[in-house]
Every structure is written in C-alpha cells, then in structure tokens.
Amino acid sequence: MNDKIQNAQTDERLFSRAAEGCIIGSMVIDPGCIDKVSVIVGPDSFAFPENKTIYQTILDLRETDKAIDGFILRKHWRKTKKLDEIGRRRIFTKNSRFSSFIG
Image (tube, rainbow, N blue to C red; front, side, top):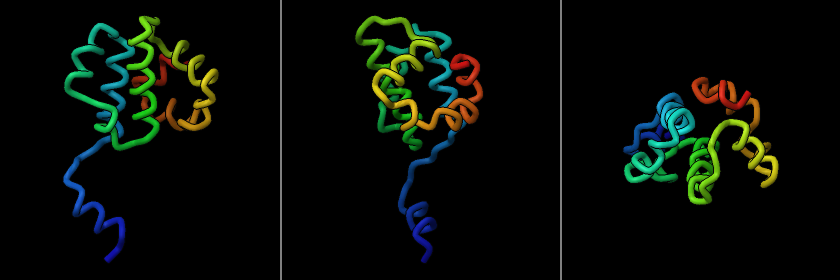
C-alpha cells in the first residue's frame, strides 16, 4: 500500500492550510484573540510546519508583550534565522489572509 494512503488512513486528524492560515491571520489582525485561541489551539494542532512556526512565534512574542504584526514577525524571523526555514515566499502566498500583513 502506498505510504501516503496508509498514513492518511491511520491519521484521524483533518487539516487544511486555509484553516490554519485563518487562525494565524485572525491572531495578527486581532492580537486580543491570541489568549482565547491559545487555550483551544496549540502548536501541535498545526499540520504544516511553517504554520506551526508562525503560530509559535506569535505565542512567543505575546509572552514578551511585543506588538504583533507582519513586520515584527518578519524581523523576528530574520533575527532568529527562521525566515528561510519557514519558506519566505511560500508562506506569504499560501496564507493569503496573512500575506497582506507580511508585505
């Protein structure tokens, strides 16, 4: 049996890049919802590694009381050398709600 099919059959989680992007986009648009979302959704809730990294960065910045917007996220990823890891262009085009904040 094809590994992809077998993994899909044994993995009961459903995931969507668009849904993950909406969660992230909502947190950037309205940082006030971060605390509410983080009670329900954890980093391991994200199926796509780049979205998990973005989400974790938002949580980390929230803990330091730093402002959260696309420019701050991008600056943080450059500083921590994660911008290439998360796939600079890929992330900014696939998470369309989020991309307008990144620039």
